[in-house]
Amino acid sequence: MNPFSTALDLQRRQVTEATEFVQRSTVAPEQSGRMASVDVGQTESEVVYSENKLDLLHYEPRTEEQYDVPLLIVYALINRPYILDLQPSRSVVRTLLENGMDVYMIDWGEPSRLDQSLRLSDYVTRYIENTVDVVRERSGQDQIHIMGYCMGGTMSAMYAALQPEKVQTLSLMATGLDFSGEGGVLELWGDEEFYDPENVTGAYGNAPAEFLDVGFRLMDPVDNFVTKYLRLYENIENEDFVENFARMEKWLSDGIDVAGETYSQFLEDIYQENRLMENELYLDGTHVDIENIDMPVLQIVGQYDHLVPPASSKPFNDVIPSTDTEVMEFPVGHIGLSVSSRSHANLWPDVVDWYQERAKGAEMVLEDISGIGPTYAELLIGAGVESVEELATKDPEALAEEIDVSVSRIRDWIEQAQEMSE
Image (cartoon, rainbow, N blue to C red; front, top):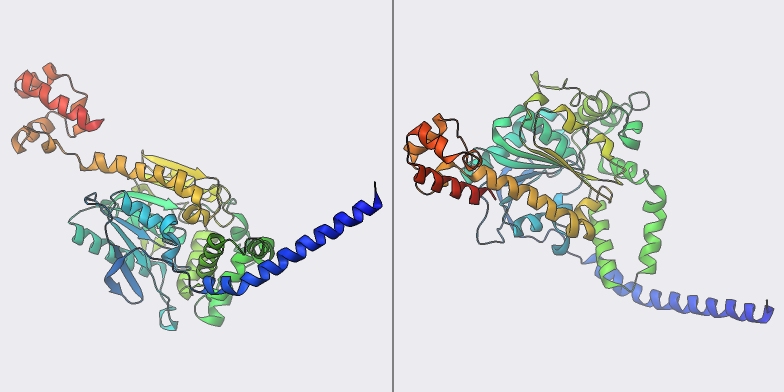
């Protein structure tokens, strides 16, 4: 090895790195201004209902026609809901709208000290119940789709168990449901042996956003306190990277307190006692019976989610009676489900397909078939043919003889039913 060339190479690297440092330092003030001015939650919406701190948002449609059955997103009680609409190219809300969904979302707002006595029953049987009824009334539908995010998913599962007749499908995104030992670091930290939530609520009334934020960041301290800032420095000249970084930091720092009684009850009943999964949860004396969850259920989970590991979500599908359950697991973390470009390219199209398949089946009735009116529909139902899908599988001669209708007419109905079911 030539010591002179080695020394020269080292000198060149030092000069190069120094030059890059100067260049990055030069653009830093400009990029700081860019970071401060980023927009979030840009999809147009209007507030159609308010109660206490809660606002129910209804998003403007982005297609000429929408599916009849609307979707209500029940967001978590922690942080702000615009993580689902962080930017136009990575917006869960916009993706759903662009595929014909009629989308509503609950923005819980921030509880004050006056709200510290709110319990889970207030959120589930009053606030969610009232917003569901508003959406049902506005849409003219008896049932709606419900999508719950994180803690909002846990509350959505409770609601579906209490009011299954109002829920057409239930989708649960990054939702903690089973805390029997596979709930990750949060479950360990929240174990009753080590932690009593009333120590926090007794001191502060509500669970402070700052306290919750520090806890979440300490779950991955190296990335949250060191690595991500190194990545920002290395990409300080990349405008898209800087703006994406700023949007995420804005959301992460925009935390809200959690009502004290709800925080304590959630930690004790869900994390420490696992009462929802064990079907032993009661809200104000009413059993939250998960045996009532018989509607289609979709779980959307992050393979690398350290807040809600897949093992704390997926087993729920095995203990409910629904015969139509599915898990979509994608190789991202908790937040990546919402904002990762890979998720929007590869995961959310599958979620949309899941909704569209069930919307198509749910909206088809016998009278949608040309030639079938109320009288013929009643004859078919009397013969055990209660849906378009069932009609598509029937033998025309046998059915014609059973309901005393011509074979040619039955054959035409069956052909239409088969086309509609494809």
